Image (cartoon, rainbow, N blue to C red; front, side, top):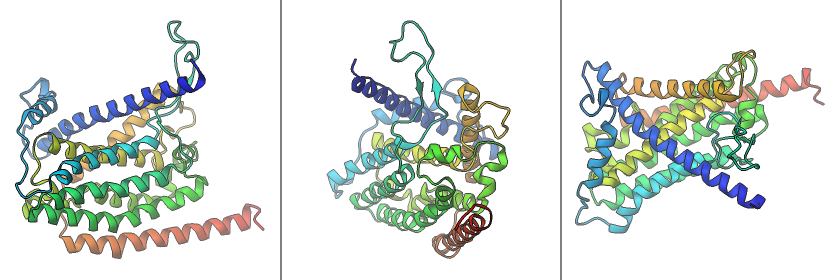
Length: 357
């Protein structure tokens, strides 16, 4: 095989692994969330299909696949059909530049092609120099799928949900971007791998310690971006039925849910890589590569996802005016002040101890 064919084959395999893992994680997350919320609310949750209800996501998928596709008579057909695809496509596209775990070496098995034996690889589709900018741009496009779904259904409830989505994401994206600025300045790079490498060593080098205000802003803004409680106003069941996806059923409803959960997993992975040290264990004596580091990284991601579930079972929903005021009057000012204070301190440190002129 030519070098180009080799790289193309590796890229295709990486894409298949990432998409397959995300689809599996989406199914597992729905089961874990329902079981956890049931435990918090003194209910049983899914417990009939398979051991502990573990096969319930598969049963739900089969049910949705065979359900009748319903569409409002006055809906814009092509926009209505395209909206779920846009939501899933943008969610998947954002995952292309995110490293899922540390680099590792392939085993030197004799049945593998020679060019694959002992090759260093990483579950990362595209290692862009502007990785964070790419994620920011693609996630900003994700709102178009939700607005399109709300508008195309020709329903007042769907339209209100779509408008809420656009206003909410616009309000919180600025705070989300501010939360990344100091990390980029510290690592002097937009590459996520470089930001992870900048957190090597002891756990006090993690950005959650060095940039704690930025972490709080990120977590709250990201919760609003993926519309999780207490920021789930676009789907406010007690006010607008189900928001932008009120009129969706069958597999298109499943696609919208898939996009939401993939976005949630992406937010958790980014929180781990950007703030929780990535696959760095926080203790120099422990390995930062190989299976142990991958398990450590996965445990951090699982913990962040658990916190999201925990908040869903604990907190009430904001009023819409409270949501907007919190974004514009609290999060954005806090994030901007933190960036200015950190940048000022960093420049002063360079002048005094870093050999700046």
